[in-house]
Image (cartoon, rainbow, N blue to C red):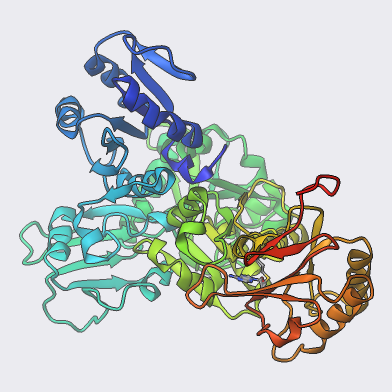
Length: 614
Ligand code: SAH
């Protein structure tokens, strides 16, 4: 996949009715892997599919099978086309409209739950258009209440969703009572928001419960309430061979009802490995989209449980299946419900159920790591693909200077974690931890992420974890590196063979660095020096200059570029002899020319080929 930021929207369809619109959608379809649909009347276009019926009929045929549909068509026409097909917010595809000149991208329908708001932003990033998002949450700069728990796999429970969302849109105080699930989202709210975490508030205007309890709200309550259910419950199951799916489901439902537990808070089912082919359990997991974890008798035997059984021990080699499996699946947390035994009235089979509560909710998502280079500084030097990676991420991790630089690209409700410059390894670890949990995490580096950036550190850390290469999924988004940015400000110094050398000896022994400096100087490479001087490391650049003076004349052109493409940019064209007179620090890249490099009209030029007389 070219850009996996669009993966959550697959299958994605794009529809145009004329050649101009097709031209706007075509590159987008390439990036997003959307199917481009055109009427037969339009001239044959590469990689397009043609519909033979009316657009209305065609739309009906693709409606339920697609996650998102992008139109390059008049908004009014789209409204009429989709009106008869709209069913409900939860299942309708996201509908996005692009105007015929490709200047605006409109989130028309399915903004929150369908993800149209996010898709609109991603398409706008990709084609350089203005996103038009009209939902109330986006103007309040608040995460939308009906998608709040989506990144963490929470399930939406019962309640008056329209009422609570309307209260939030009016700016009324929405009380949040969170009993389980992570609270990361609370820590990353904008400074001004209308959520209240004060439980003692006597009469809030709306309330969100985030809990594992199944609450029944009275229909005539004086304020609207909703409930989100983080998936923290692991249900341990033991059963006789051949027990039906219905009996197992009844056993779970009855247990949940008895203990007021929300079925939506169930993370998954756990049992002994000999049950891994038990049809009733497999059917149940399939129907409810629940994972099924199994453990060996040996593993289960180690767990101390409240209700051990000798009969079970004799049969399967562990005194507990349901209780022990629930505890293990919940990462050794205590049981919330001890073993309950169920037998069918008129059918064979028997089930035991026990429930444990995990500390961390199960997201049910496969995490992604986006390793993103954000370019040298200004936002117009960042690639559209890197922008989509940042927009689509649930969490962004990077050095604080860089997270500040991309602040305008950040989306409401994203988790932004800035760590100090020296903590690269911790940053990589944290990103992996969040991605392993199921989040889409963008790790950002300045310049290119694979050039003295975070990409290598993250891949190294994954390797140390015996990563399988798939989970989390990794995608790398390149950026304009400092050497390209600095060169473009100085002229065309990198026109011939060049190399980059970092003078930082924090992770590389100084002997190795000097050896490379010597080789580069001797080989007449143009050299871009990264990390040239810090407050503590002042000698390295002096030594580097001496090494080059042994092989090149003192008037060799040198460019000192500080903060390229940032507010305080400074470009100094100088020579090897005088280079130390210019300001050089950790925000600087130093480019030392080769034996043919020259300065002309304030530009540094290295000839492309030496035999040609320019
Ligand atoms: N991944 C980055 C490099 C990180 S190492 C990239 O590809 O550009 C940090 C060094 O990069 C700094 O010490 C400095 O030498 C250089 N650098 C980064 N951004 C710069 C900028 N805007 N202007 C000049 N040099 C820069």
